[in-house]
Amino acid sequence: MTWKPSARSSVPPFAVMSVLQRVAELRAAGREVISLCAGEPSQGAPSDVRRRAADLMSGSIPLGYSETFGIRALREELAAHYRRWYGLDIDPAQIALTTGSSGAFLMSFLAAFDPGDRVALTRPGYPAYRNILASLGCEVVELECGHEQRFQPTVELLEQAGPLAGLVVASPANPTGTMLAADHLAELATWCSVAGVRLVSDEIYHGITYGDSRGECAWSHDRNAVVISSFSKYWGMTGWRLGWALVPEDLLAAFDALAGNYALCPPVPAQHAAIAAFTESSYAEAEAAVEEFAAARELLLQRVDDLGWTDIAPADGAFYVYAGLGKRLSDHLDSAAWCADLLDTTGVALTPGNDFDPIAGGNTVRVSLAAGAAAVETALERIIAFQSRTA
Image 1 (cartoon, rainbow, N blue to C red):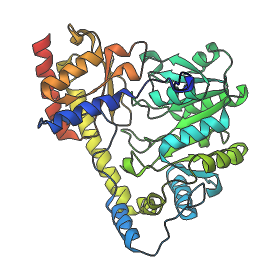
Image 2 (image 1 turned 90 degrees about the vertical axis):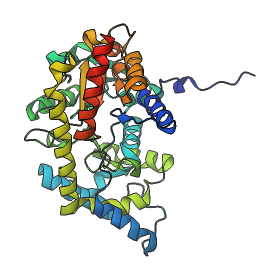
Image 3 (image 1 turned 30 degrees about the vertical axis):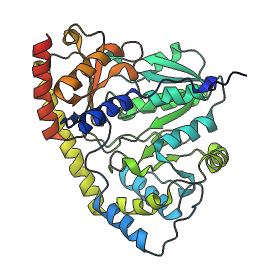
Image 4 (image 1 turned 30 degrees about the horizontal axis):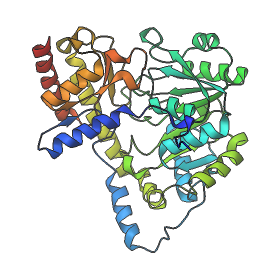
């Protein structure tokens, strides 16, 4: 008998992890590397969260299994957060804590879609949406969204896509940083409701924005949507593996059953510590980090002419800049080869666009600003010098 992996597991690996592996190898060899590839905020968890986590280890709070949807106290804090930020009243019973936003996407896709269902995504977009859906047997329908659409889906594109069971949107989006304005999200939500299409809204970068809005919540427009968010980005708690979903009433039982079987519950120490994410001090630290991302963003945008990059996406939020390399590719085959050469030559790690756009991503790169302004400024000087040598 010939043993082989399942057909459903034949999805591409997340390319940024390969870049991070090379970063680790260079650092182990003594090289100094500026990593602008991962979407990982450099500030880490707020001080109050860290202190609460330390107290938990020597305290009397039991850290065994929680309810499948997570501890009630944290879900109540999240409900209060939605009242403060969005003016929404949300029943904590409809908030499901998960093992990172990744767990929320897996549970949501399993609960909402069947094998063969057609689910629309933007291209470029976060590759895990595509790969999780594909591994579950769904048909991924990629909507080609460029500058004309501000890298976001439109009703026109949806109507051209044929029958759909779902639509995944992200605002601010990874890798482009573009956002859906309130009227645009309302239009998409209304179209989905009328067409019987389940809207899944990725809102994990809410709060990391550079205008007047922290982000528009899909539940302001449609309570049949699934809303997904996380403590990883705004609060800098990536390794704590704690996200959540706002679950529509019709999916509650399915989500609960699936989550109980897949994960039992989210990480309990992280849940208890995350209660401290909602203190005044924790919000202040998060806002200070956003100001640092904004400073790094401004530095990069000021050097666009020097970089010679093209088709810069409007970076409304998140901490990314997505751009075309154009003539800067020089003799490199694609952006993956260009990024590999840049890393080995200068010690600057960027993410090639192939992951985010398997059709046109070979000409693009994503720069993460999460390392802060000083790191970005030094990296820009190295990139510009590298390009002058390879032109």
